[in-house]
Amino acid sequence: MVLPLLSRLFATDLAIDLGTSNTRIVARGAGLVLDEPSVVAMRDNEVLAAGREAKAMLGREPGAVTVVRPVANGVIAEPDFAQKMLTHFLARIERRWLTHWRPQILMTTPSGITQVERRAVRDVALGAGAREVYLVTEPFAAAIGAGMPIQEARGSLIVTVGGGTTETALLSLAGMVHCESVRSGGSDMDDAIIQWVRKHHSLLIGLRQAEAIKLALGSARPTSADRQFEVKGRGLIDGLPRIVVLSDDEVAEALRDSVVAIVESVRACLERTPPELAADIAEHGIVIAGGGALLHGLDDLLRDEIGLAVTVSSEPVNGAALGAGKMLDGLEMLRRVAASP
Ligand SMILES: Nc1ncnc2c1ncn2[C@@H]1O[C@H](COP(=O)(O)OP(=O)(O)O)[C@@H](O)[C@H]1O
Ligand SMILES: [Mg+2]
Image (cartoon, rainbow, N blue to C red):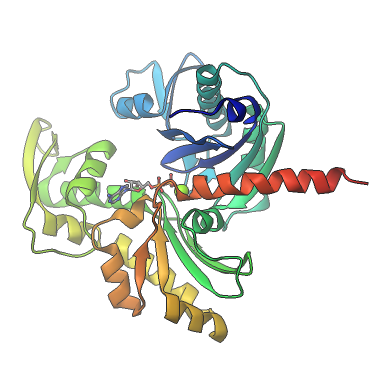
């Protein structure tokens, strides 16, 4: 990435999408500057690794090392670790740019969170060195990132399926009309695969292996592809390492409940949509985003279940960070208005 000199000097504002699975950071004028799993590995109260490197240690750590996912279901579950992870990420960006700054930070949060949970997000950003912190809900940012016309007097519906949250938001006139938020997402699919393999093959597998299976074979409903995957784990009965072969239909079956939860959540939001806005949605369809939107066939299944056109966002995974990044220009205006007499 080539950074123009000017933006390098003045890029003091950051948009941070601190997700359950991934942290993505956009710097004003420079685009996406960091994209790492939200995982931190600690040893003796020091950060040993963060991001990809820490994720690779998950389930393999010796006793002296603790590997933590500090964000759970979209909210900060481990504030100290979250702050250490973010501080580590920001230091990495600073080192690359050879600057030191106290940025203004716009953080994305799930929409269905409490004041206390919002406070925790703010505190983590302040603790990691932010000069000022602003918050925006993730579906709102993701809709901007997807280029949806949310400022217009017309309803737009976006569904974001993240690692630990699924949010369906109805937006109009740059505001949120309402939102349906459930605390389940891609990680629940991984858990469901672990349970399936345990129950049907008597094999214990780890979270990373389960995610790999989902990425390789996962689909929202059975396909005619007939694909298979070799799964390695520990036998439940003899306790020895073993390999079993899993089919795509099995994985689709394992994922069924998670997929139904997503469909039901979208349906619940639609049922509460006022008629004028419902007419807009019927005309323009809905957009799905977040890593979970990439689950094979989820768009088709949703279309069949709710009878509306469904499109995957043009920026499914980075959309929330990029959308929040676009809003950084607005912060400047906010500040100027606040400073004027
Ligand atoms: N191609 C894919 N198929 C199914 N799930 C996927 C795919 N790509 C990513 N995911 C899942 O999406 C989730 C991460 O999505 P993301 O939007 O980054 O989450 P968050 O915002 O919660 O950090 C993970 O559970 C990941 O396994
Ligand atoms: Mg997200």
